[in-house]
Length: 130
Ligand SMILES: [Zn+2]
Image 1: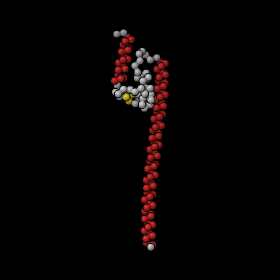
Image 2: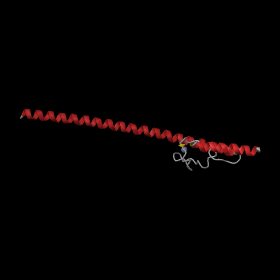
Image 3: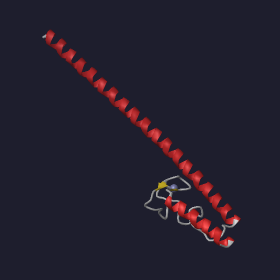
Image 4: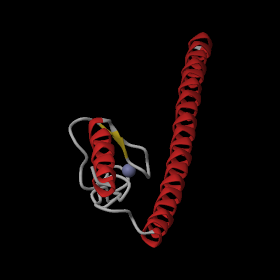
């Protein structure tokens, strides 16, 4: 077998491994099972179809293309992480709002019970005076 053929064979085998294994989105690490990889990641919208780390390419990927890819990937990961951080922050704030709302409702309920008890006392006093 010629050297080129050997390399191609390696790539083919490498690709076969990638296809057989569960693929993860390189940006958000969303896992794609055996149902296959969609064109775009449904979570972060990364273009999976044109991702050179996931697709079979004939011949070596040029250094400049790979560098540009890695820059784009890093940027997309940073954006994704920031989005996750904001999502967590938002969730935390929503939980805090819910906690305060429950606490307010509980206070209101207790206050209403106290008011009822006071009214009852008033009625008792009124009936004694009569
Ligand atoms: Zn993704």
